[in-house]
Image 1 (cartoon, rainbow, N blue to C red):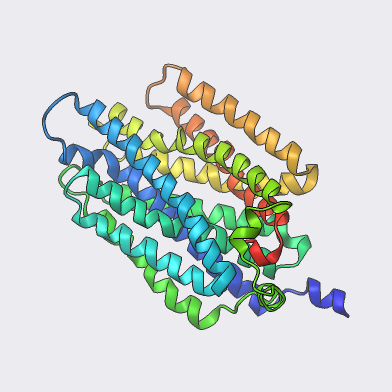
Image 2: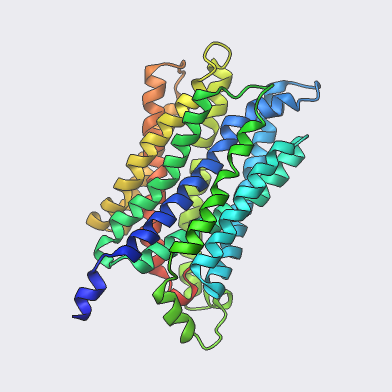
Length: 354
């Protein structure tokens, strides 16, 4: 009887999955905004001194780095709140954070302003990543977790696909880019639905009741859990640095290659990359569930190396070959984000998982 209960799928599981999926989808939408907006916005802010491409590239690099630092800090901060206050409460706070500060990008007058708003928004994005994963993995039966990991991982890439579609419908230009940030406020409405309809994790409630005041931060930074924390940080850093150091630059690169003659090119490659990423995120954890976690991780690293090596080392014009490589680059590099929701929750006990 207990086994049947543990493997049953009901309204609670679907509500949790829907909330996490939408949270991750809008997370991806907010992340995908900057590569689309970056070049037009930075060219609008260009002071007229020095090479414009060097100016744009330098600030693109700095703002991306600041964003990643904020996402890491947000995962830590909101993860702590998720372990203390509950997954659902912390998730609503994280979504409000990334929605509000993404919208603030509308008022940016300098690259420093953009960097500041992106840092603050990324706190919420990093928090939503960890909280959505923890909530789903604690709510769904074990046999469904590889598929759920893929579904949640793919959600962010539906967000990337959506932002590409928006950018294709209305072209983002040097004189008309601020409106894109206002679209980023929309996820704030999701908060009310989550608070009304999404139940808290029963596993978290049980673990909280039995925690006896233990600090989740102290636990993840102390033996024996410290070993798994360092392992998780190492694996995650490899994928994050590799992805953000390569694929995130493609829309900016394409805008430079073809932006004058094909103004929708950067939106097109964003959509192609997102479509490949959706496929990769669904297949990554399924491969991990079938072949094992470590062989799958090695395979994803090798495939990403090959595809990105070809894409960035070959002399290519913006055409069919380029677009195909962008699709496969999105697929291979994003597959990690389906693998992580499967593997990382397995390393930690419920009381400090977020």
